[in-house]
Image 1 (cartoon, helix red, strand yellow):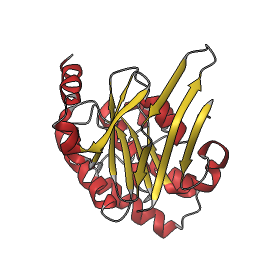
Image 2 (cartoon, helix red, strand yellow; image 1 turned 90 degrees about the vertical axis):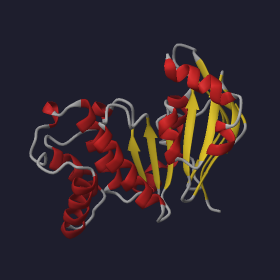
Image 3 (spheres, helix red, strand yellow; image 1 turned 60 degrees about the horizontal axis):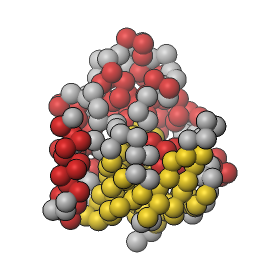
Length: 239
């Protein structure tokens, strides 16, 4: 299988000298795989995602996305990647829902027909009809999450990176979102997402568990749910 993401024992030192690491097992995401990254709050999940999308450069270790270093070569791979971070307000740019979905497509040079077709697809698929002209400021938290996901999926990316992307989305919206993600992953899109509850795991093929700076588990969803680590994950989930 084609490796889309490969992370080998990364460490990052922040300006305040806080050091976050993800060592132990290598984290690998292959073409068409849906991978969940789980761990307690503060275990380093967001740091891992920030390296995948090229926001951070590791102090030690290696990060490869589409065969290149995303920190130095993001320009060459940006069009292949859709991203939804925890604080979606930081990535919503357009004044209205429609403007925001169109922004990245325009920026990457898609034709007007492609933009119209893809915008229509994600608005319909994510139940955003009727909100096209709504000012982003007035959207609910769940609507903002769906909008960020719409902008990411409109690119038809080869890699979708999601940091707690399902939080705040209502059950109907969540069903629509997972269907769209599964539809695109069946056509080769790889997905890696931080997951904080057991129910969301059903949408993923593989699980990595991050604990105290180490990736202590990497395997199928079924293997994870039958392991002792499941109990620790579920205990955190109830808190």
